Image (cartoon, rainbow, N blue to C red; front, side, top):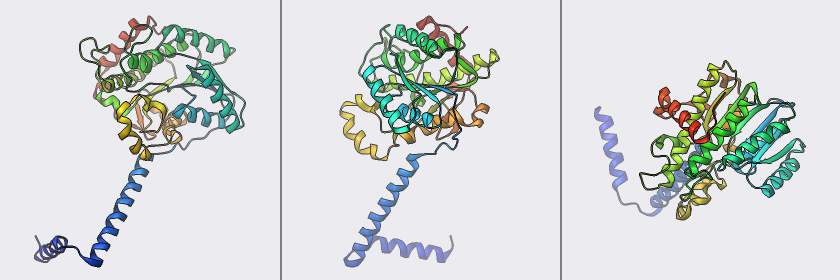
Length: 340
């Protein structure tokens, strides 16, 4: 080491280790507060993430969004409506659907916004919803399908068919809806199917999905369902390719977002809500969805995973065909629904 540099480091260290008194102490405190404030601002900006840069005129286009009455889904619906699309939100509660549509119409000044009922944890509801949706299109087709709805870290529960609630709602319900629509040729060739996942998927495993052999863990169940979302989007793209379809399927992480998804956190809310000041707003959380739905570049990345409006590496399980194929075959058996 250079002698001068060593001497400078020694002197600096000596100053730092001296007792801090008087004005120097005040300066240090002010500096520490300023540094902390700047650090928090920087962290907040980093958490905010990237924004969608594509805002085409969507007049004449049809967008369907599951869970579009609140949070990310609501903001996604709002943005699509502002671009001129006909927007159909699929919701589980009629009153919430009516309220969301009224609010969306008022805030956007657009009239082509409607709701239909869908319970993703009930496959009979999924079948009915898909059929009603197709009929309501009047022969037209969906241009963008956003599989947005979901639950997170719920207490142990089952779907109507007896499957683990988060896996059944977040994955099986969306698998069934998507395949039923595809089988009826209800999605435009060249359209997009966007499935919201989470970076929690990196902790997911595709074993004992019904927790029959291991004690139930709410976060593990959530991670499993989110990995299923990523594998589903990947395998769907593979099968669409084999059918020579131009439909694009991708999955994404919306970021850490302040939404109602945290309603089941229980005691963890004590930690979650103070931290949520750094999270994305729902509109910021919708940006990667919008990017995947609207960017021409996404056509180069069918089956892949996006975060902050760019393609990124997903779980190692997505690097091979076997895991996604195995999940697809399991989904076929559990729902009794197969892609034609």
